[in-house]
Image (cartoon, rainbow, N blue to C red; front, side):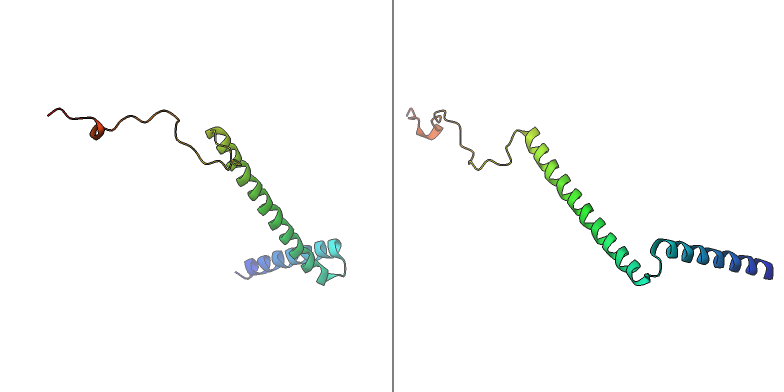
Amino acid sequence: MAAMDYDSQLLESVSVRRRRLRDALLFGGQRQRRTVDERLGKVFAGVVIAAVLCAGCVGWSFISHRLIGKSPYSTSVPTSPTSAPSPSPSATPSSR
């Protein structure tokens, strides 16, 4: 059991060392800058994702209105047909 414990400890220490070496290679001695860069990257990614989602919603709305036949930019109020109204049954003279 001691050998398995030693193996897992060795593997963990190797992974920690590799991560530290990678971070040192990428960011040098500026460790504080690394956290700021990561945060700015996440903010930028969030803004890009939000912009893509908004553009997709606008595009979907435009295309769906286009397929239905309605113009999404029209401000006119729909009007009733111009045909003459038919007389109602109560307006006709009754035969008594």
